[in-house]
Image 1 (cartoon, rainbow, N blue to C red):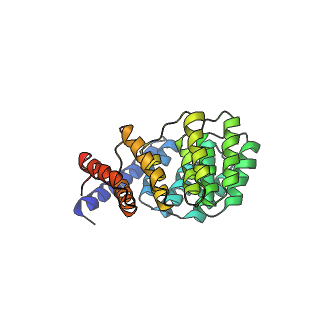
Image 2 (cartoon, rainbow, N blue to C red; image 1 turned 120 degrees about the vertical axis):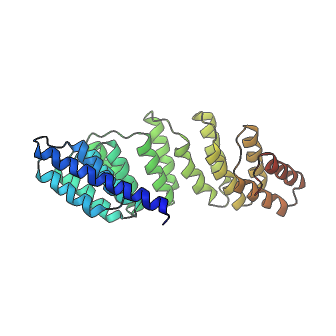
Image 3 (cartoon, one colour; image 1 turned 60 degrees about the vertical axis):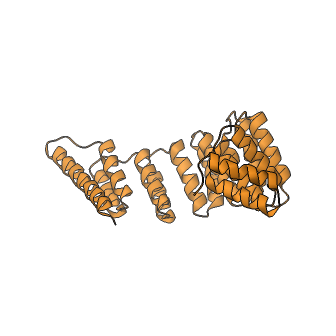
Length: 281
């Protein structure tokens, strides 16, 4: 660990200690800390992965009549998920439910994402299909995008496409993040260029979206992997024509594929672009 990182960590620890001292002083003077104050300290503990201290503080605040809210629980659950402590994160969601704290859309979005990462596809679907409507919690764009992404991770393309139709029927307009996992899934399967083409057409013509750098990169790399070099090059040409500068790895991949297939005119163009865009190593 560098001296700079060590110094930053020490400052962070010192700030948490100061915050805890402030909380104790507030209590001594008859000014009980609010849930917002506690949540700020809990977040600092979670960022440092000091989850045991976070649990102790959670117990302490509850015993003093300051009950955690949905923001508190969601933050801890999400922090644990980022560390891939999935089952532990799920226990936090169980604790919130048993406490009587009302879930909101952000909580459910995080929970669905967590369940998908933890390998619980059925449970994620149950939360999406049953629990959210039962509790009167509305789904938003992120809810749909998260569920579609999970379904694609499990290769459930038909279910994901059905969900895309459903969100449109619910007047929830898709964005690029909606389409990206679907494109990635079909690009991973040889012979599914028709599905990719349909999605691109729908993305542009129906949803009125334009491709960004990440989507172009996803498409070009995926097409190169399935030997659709001509199509990949057309998208590359479209990207550059839209004044979007490609990533170096994209140029190198497409250059390698066009060289392998003796597409000399394409090779020369890409080599010139690498120089013009300042992408040379």
